Image (cartoon, rainbow, N blue to C red; front, side, top):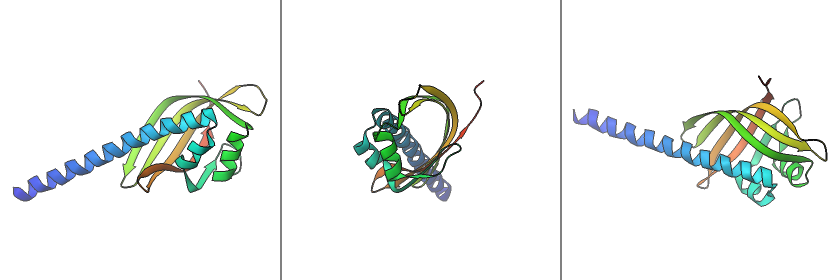
Length: 143
């Protein structure tokens, strides 16, 4: 009986840690959205891992410095994120976020557009902070 109670206590601690990780990533994901909309390169520097990689729909990969330059230069302007679905899966120092989002954006001086994306974000804990290591998006039809 004592072993069973000890096992249950360990399980409760593990579940609470995973819940805390999901909440921390949820908060960091909102910070990332604000940084992208504001084109805040210093915040992006802190929120992306050094080996960050972005794979947009139909395009080539973008590394951290390329992505920050793309956003801070205004060649890609994020206007708003409307997150329609979010599913978090937590592992020890990694949280995967599957998301469906309507993204309002501009390319350079072009018109504002809306694209529905199915995204997978890979968040990792480095030096006590949650950072994005990778994101991949696929365009899905809006209904």
